[in-house]
Length: 467
Ligand code: DHB
Image 1 (cartoon, rainbow, N blue to C red):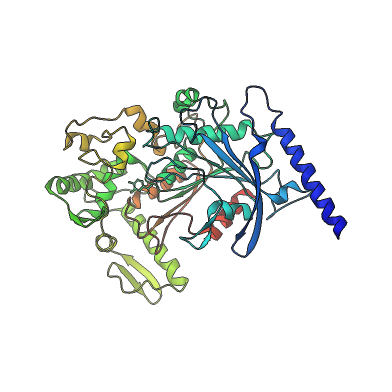
Image 2: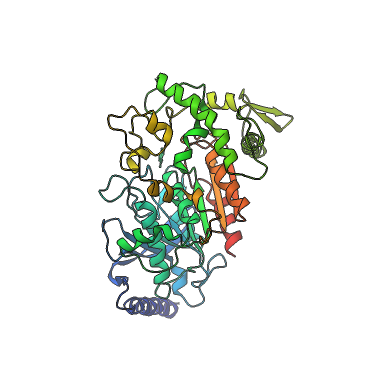
């Protein structure tokens, strides 16, 4: 027994040395992984003890403008350092690489660190991934409050991190660089969709060069997207398509929309059908009143969410906007839904008339839609650079020549989420599916603006596409 233990310890020491040696053998021009800051940890994930090794704070660009952020952490399950080690059918060579981002509110995002998540009472997505045999590589990412963090810094950094991973393919302790998966929620979900949609798009090249990103591919295998605050220059319209007529908003304390806001709500609602129809989504349209097959599709997503909850024994009864008969959810009234959900944001929801939303700040304190620019109440209305608006929207790249969009997508949006309209993730999914990608989209009962709350289901899906 003692001898066995000694052998195991020796093996561990030998394998650690081998990896440390490997790291310093990179080409002279590459960023090398400092072996000194490698640590080993054991954590309880559910009822399972999970041991992993970490490499922390590795710069992922050659000319960082925010060195505190342009760095990443690597987490590798301990099993992969042992001869023949495997977890969940994966080995050191085949393990997918999950790259979660910690961006929220378009703010700078720190590295996503494995931990137990007190909010959901489960391991967080990084710890859960390690327990399932995934390698986790989490980059910190610039955001709007840093001097160099405005649009499109966040997607430039995420891409640079992917490029670094590919560039160091042969020096990584484990992981399959053809199975890179992004994950994020809200602004981080928008970022995850951008990374998935824009693989190798030439528009980002100048930004990537500027920070000294490696010259590598930056396409990824799959995108995991929760409640994405995305498609920003078109998101005000579907918000009003849902919330028009609900005039109290809850950004902080309850407030009433003023006349400018109400006029914006009417105009933006009326503009939505033309936008939706301009996307030419096969079989999904709206008439000028905002009715039609696209509306039925959105209703269907809510019905499916309610049915799934009902089948799982949850109570979905007693809501005046949801029809349930004999255990079957049969209908949704979207006007009633909007009253029940409540409005979070005044119109326009993203490009604020006063030019003071998170999104205005992301675009250098400028407008990014014609409507808000024309009707601005700001002292000095200004319009963001069209090029920056373009590269912040994943919709512009799906189906575009020369772009390698991720094949697999899992998109989720809570039924109680009113940070953006369900139409936004739904449009993203319909566009992806129409262009031949595989997007699994659903609304989730009982869930507000949130992400990574359904890890067993998420990893069942991920294992299904990775194995
Ligand atoms: C986030 C939420 C918002 O409502 C928004 O407008 C932008 C970002 C977020 O939680 O990341």
